[in-house]
Image (cartoon, rainbow, N blue to C red; front, side, top):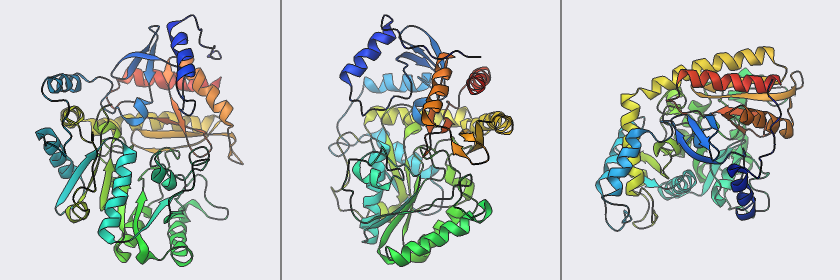
Length: 441
């Protein structure tokens, strides 16, 4: 049994740095753990005192190729000696153009496509909304309960969680609407999980009758698996139903692949599981292997609908980030990381399912590929969420045992896995052992 995590000693280097963090950094910044990292390699990180941890957080899904992959490091070193910055809007450079070409090739669906690069997922989401409005000449945007699309003001308005994300930050921008996303473990009272697709699509019809006419809606934006919402996989047919609605009413279907993309679910993009073709797709996180980079990919006529000069930013798609991303895409191909996502997912699913069947704390085990989660409860019959303080204690016990994990979910009671897809089998099993011990304790 793991012992309860001891407070970080202020006499240690990690403790001293943590004390400085609390003194100097805004308390609005989240702190999943009390670890202060000095270096990292693949799926391992070392703190400022030399203690090693297995990393199941992966920079919140940004490190599918692992920490400091040698090919990414080599690409960055080479690029640093050539060109650091011009701003693509001032003077173009080749690796931005090459990366857009590769992203266009990867996006599902036929037809001519284009891409544009930004710094963060939030920035790309906002620009996907702008493209949708410019193309349709409409204002309305629909997102979903439990959604998470970022922390800028528009993204907060899209997000499906009020506290702490939107609290005190209003008023929100106008013409944003929220609908119900199918959550099989927690369906509405009286609704069976197998009926959720039909129910949620009917809820959209209600929204169109009561809140906004479909001809005034520019876009529906959805995550193919909800990330921060708790790794919620929608019921079969829901995403296809959204595609059908968008086609029927001339709305854009915007798919947020920031956390789900690049092999995390066992496909290059999660939307491929449902064989749905989006109008616009937003990517980020693992595209840059830790470098700030995101993008919007979509039908060429949509990306060309915004006036010249209306879209962009000083640093979006900077040469260093593009160099990292081009290396990432080569690594995915050569190391077969999409296959690795499926393989890791099978291992994790087997362990998580066994905990769900045996542990009184694990109410649900779910996910796609290596994007897997357990939802923790105080009582399996009522599905009462495990209180956040107890979830935090489990995460702290994992930290004490040498594992970094993070939470998610509307009740902060979901533990999710975002380990690098390059993780060695021995470290994967060891990390799962630590998490199991923490749950037992």
